Length: 424
Image (cartoon, rainbow, N blue to C red):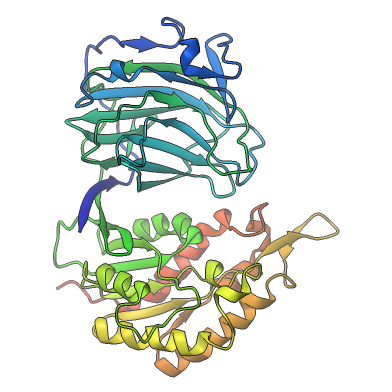
């Protein structure tokens, strides 16, 4: 099992840590961009440079020194009308085959999330990293351990970055066939020192990122063992609402988080070594948990564009098997099933509304799940109803509900709170 560090930013009073900053070894506008390390048209205009899939540039790997300690700093602004799915690699020196280096990949709204890759593996999820204003991103490596900052606030931390022989490249596509729009960069600086942002507060709350057989999850750092523990299981919808659940239970319970739990057919869930069972086994071993809020990526499993991945005929038997498995694995844990959210659309009056036609398959599986959970004595939390009550909070992609995240979190938190043990 691999354990990394990831942190959640907290609002804090900023105090200066460094009176004097080292000088950068490379700075946009002061050092040349080597033509041999650039593609397309790379021409800074008033200190701003634009990168996309075709227009990229790189800084020689030698300027990272021995790659034990260095800092990459830059301001970045996404397009005002960013297109969902057209993701961009902001910077990278990753060698996936050699499992070396780092890469920061941004996925525009409505997902609006960045992924940090370390040694070719996704190690941190960074929600709401960018907007259409310039934000300062700092990637600080000290003794090969990475700290990621946005505007001086610590977002995430990892360890054990292996030195890469590849140059540090800014720009590049991520999804085949979906070329990213142009992103603006400025104030790009590279240091061979650990240069902390002004105002870095070391009291930021820390979480542990743990990887094992078939899973990667994030765990709260336990300071008071007497407090209850909660596990949130979900997909990209839960990425947005999980942080509000953590806020709701701050100083009252610890909240861990796992994006996962799904299975695709054909699958034999009677097999005790089925991949999804191995994943659940590993995740729950990080407990014990008092409560689990559980939606095993149902939007992915029940996708109407891929119906063969989860059939109506096999689903009840498969879900029942997983429920029995989880009850045996964690008999003292109270599970709560979280109903899948519907798709949305725009009506003739240009108002956001539920897309009931496209959501037919989701509704069918929600009802099948309701029956199974009722038979198994597992309470159900209805996020579908929240969406129906607030269709205006849906996003333009028809899938996600970022503006409803706080409502989702409150609905879940109030449902599970009575099942938490009272601290003595």
